[in-house]
Image (cartoon, rainbow, N blue to C red; front, side):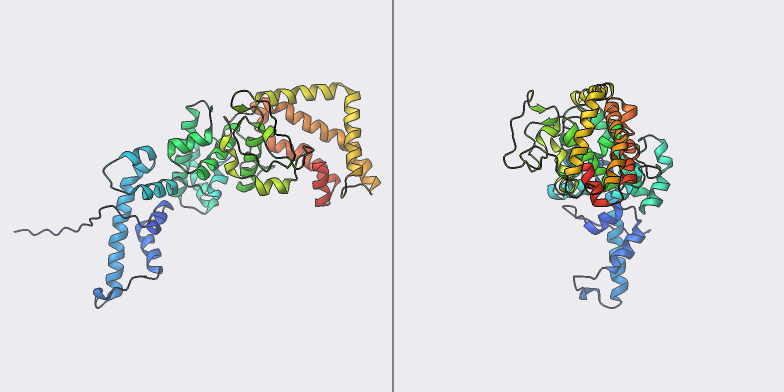
Length: 394
């Protein structure tokens, strides 16, 4: 008679080892996961193993690791569709553990995101995943998972024509936390505007993912419509809170965003970097710039450029503020004269950039144009970093 031996693991409810799950998400195989687990000190004494405990311990960990990997491979179909994962009855997993697994499965890696940005989410990007994995230091499997997750989220928001609250839509459709949904919203905004920010770009390639996420959050909270209930980002004491709105939406987010004093002046960039977070975009409506804002900027260029008298007064006001501002070039006559001669280039650069925001082909070069038409012109004139910041804020 032929004798067969079967080995099986039975757990109810299913136990998820967070360390093994993390290794599986990172794309490591079961053998690599076993090596990593063997490096961890065993917190539980196992006298029952008897002699040759090390070999038996290794065998026990190996079988558990293989079983865990088999479980996650079967769960991946459900993890990619969180609503289905929550409703399925095949795998009995506690709700808290389900939430943890979905959150981790849809988590983002800054290095991977940096190399995904600046390209379309097309099939061609699949061919570039090897380069993404090499530059980010992540496995190909991890990069592919994050790309597919980003595609699913983008497609879900695109199906709604990018209307409504994208951050809230991501949170509700994929059952993600507000923090993670906000990160996705910033990613979607950069992808939707098609900003030219790939790491190989000659002008913007030096920017980090944190730089781009801050830039996205800054634009989304100031240049996109916002829910009227948006929590103010440090509204100064004494600053006015009377805002004219239509319905429940503020057309320009800047109306309810940061001000540094009761005079309504804009705060320093350091203040914005400290207080502006990805979660600040939670009440942003849509992913398109405010139409009244772009229309006004287009009209502003036509008004200033075509009216020399108004432009002259504007330039004189700027130079007056620069001369009186503490910590700028107030004591350097030569630099002031040089700045005044180049001021038209800076003003014209700003106006041209603003006028082009209503055109998608111009909008995608926003960062590049800011760097080449404004920042570098000023930087060539002012080599002191603190003075440069003062001039920009003035």
